[in-house]
Length: 568
Image (cartoon, rainbow, N blue to C red):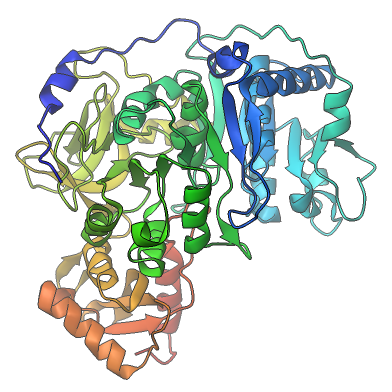
């Protein structure tokens, strides 16, 4: 690959935010609807399906959005009301979000993977007035055993998309009927850029989930990173896809909404088989829909790398850019992308509250394997210590974003507050620095190097251990599809290193492989980073956002240490 000229300093110097006082996400997306031929969505339920791909134009999107806006207004939905959206990837997600924004209401995306308790907490805490639910996710809402409707007295209306096997519940409204009876004309509510637009609950890895309230302008705050990480998106002919659930920040703010903002087509189809991400299905979808740009989280990329080591020999791919984030990509996946996909995977770092902060843009500055990149133009990002002071190069600290950009202007990417939780909101900040809870260090050239979540770090035999480096090393072995490293309690050392390993197809987890994997790590990292125990596991516990739940594995080890037999 040709050497990238480093234009980073010039980009940061020239960049200025252009945030109007009045801004609405729906109006920004639907401004493309006057072009009757412009495609908004390509719907591909199954990549291997021989049927023609379905399309939805921006004109179609505007008609459906106006119909739903009118229907919701007739149900009493007004400015500031919360609308729960429990839907899979598909046109209805875009319609529901845009309708909420047109009303000045607050869209609250919720995953179909949530169980009854997770749904109840979010619907109850947010006091959602309406829930728009796929027929496949209806059970928790209507099953008397869960009592979800009774536990959420503010939830007045249930709108069902699709056709339930047992018929539409008496207390529910059919999406199709609502839209069929509504007008296709709607006058949007005016919103300020700082008005609330989206309520997304964090994963709750360190306590109860918190609702991050995002303003309309947060979408604009994502765009500098989105554009650069996608190699100057949009270009003529670009088609976007991500397997990420549109119910979380990565799928919504890193894929769906910015693609619609730029008036380009996005593919709806998450490449799942039997409820799990299928790497072969993903490649087939990318080929069939002529996807040029993608956000694919690291776990999925690892699966794709193991399942199809040489994808361009098997598929006719139009891919020109991939962004990845949520977990560390690692050098193994990075090098595979360059060697076998012919592109640099642009790693990105951000979180629900302050998204798309740091990353790579391989067209504009050189990416360094293992680094999460540099602050994107428009964001002032640093690694700070406990007192809020910027750390020296190579010192590990908390990644934080400043309320003001490098030119002293307000950064629009910031969340407004944690819903009904002023204490947690205040704790998120040290002065004007917003802490992420993620650890990193910065080198002399301003590249950030991820050192893990603060709550994922641990000590073993006196050494401070970050799981990411060990996990990346394990994944480089042909037998390993994915890995997670956690502490296992030990009376003598405090903790020892335990690795959970998902095997690649064709390998058997036996004592010989355990020895080979331990040797593989020992030869490449420090001796103290070698896992003492390795346990083979069918699948790692994951959040709905595609992140490994190391907390679940830590708790398993804590229980095992109370008297059970250790694994290999």
